[in-house]
Length: 125
Image 1 (cartoon, helix red, strand yellow):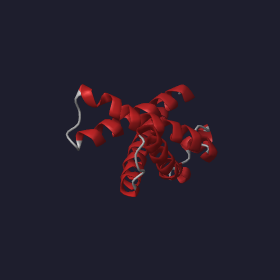
Image 2 (image 1 turned 45 degrees about the horizontal axis):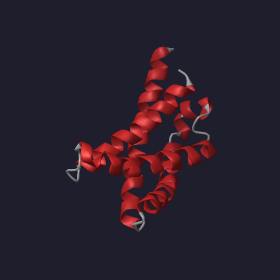
Image 3 (image 1 turned 90 degrees about the vertical axis):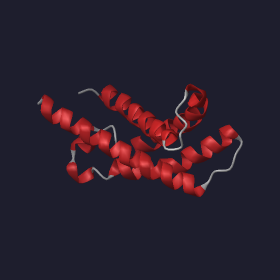
């Protein structure tokens, strides 16, 4: 599979996690779309700034079971950056608890997506 599918899947996984996060607060209407964007956009930017440093678009890393901790680490590193970017966009405080929850849930979402991607790659062989 192409790297473009992996990248698109990363964005979709982060979008799903964002929607789920808002849903847990009962904020799923279209009126919340701008607010969701102010969470998703910084998260995607932070992810794509951190992920390449850990080789997360390198096929050898993506396929190596021993390196499957890297997407989790990348998201935990990206979450503080995303929270700061989001706070700047909203002219608000960057809350540590929000950063922790954003990092953990996004790391879980990315881990699940990357498992699915690996399964699809193995199935295509």
